[in-house]
Amino acid sequence: MKRKKILVAGGSGMIGVSLTNRLKNKKNFHLISSYYRNQPQNKSNYKKLNFSNYSTCLKSTKNIETLYLLTMVSQGIMGIKSKEIDFVFKSLRVNLNLIEAAVKNNVKKIIFLSSSTIYQPSNKPISESKLDINKDPYEIYLGLGWYFRYIEKILGYLDKKKIIKTNIIRTGAVYGKYDSLNIKKARVVPSLIMRMIKAKRGEKFEIWGNSKIVRDFVFAEDVAKVLEISMYKNFNKGPLNFSSGKGVTILSLAKMIDKILKKKLNFQFNPNLPTSVKYRVLSNKLIDSMKIMNISRTSLQKGLKETINWYKNYEN
Image (cartoon, rainbow, N blue to C red; front, side, top):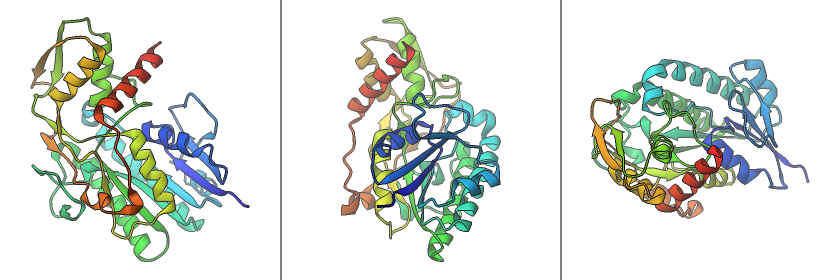
């Protein structure tokens, strides 16, 4: 039996590594995961590829059956504020190269990892149908939000014209193992974990923004499960949200991490340091109504414990 060839573009990121780990031992797949700058610890199934080069995209997508697009550079608020335009241009170039190459090489399916930054501001959980293209995304994520909208529209067009089947997953605030180790550019969860690990018991601990900021956290391993299922199933209802669907304040998050680390820190919020939007939570009613996507979520407590253990082991 001929094995299906799968390409995970962006396989060295947090979600890419989690997905690669799920797929690499499947006997009916020939898996290639790409990396460029961030070389994975375990290089099995990995290949260094520069998708900014179109000829590389053409060669890499030849005979590929399923292409995962996970190439968006992931950053925390500090990284976004400093180099957002660079992220947008690079991500557009890479993904458009890969999509065009996939069309020319008759790739059967593209699975694209989108984001909650695609949505306009909302003070309640937002569903897929509530995306209003006539309203801008959150100001802080303006470039990224429009990037995701643009790629989604292109993929939707290809699907509608029956050129390539496409599945799109919009995630909440993803956290987990294999994330950034750069505190200045990391997202909220790894930033808090790394700084708290180094903090002394009982000392003052500064958190950016204010205590009432609400996020919808989802474990990277759970996202990887959904991405794997997406290879076998087709979405006939368009892009799907996937997250916990539950809002958690940054203060509650910090307290959970503190309890796991047993630091008993004295939290102080600094509203003068960069922060993002006050509320961002996704509605998961659509994906939860689909029997083919019956995915259990890892609790935030359990996910944080696994993530903290990974960071501790990595530091050592």
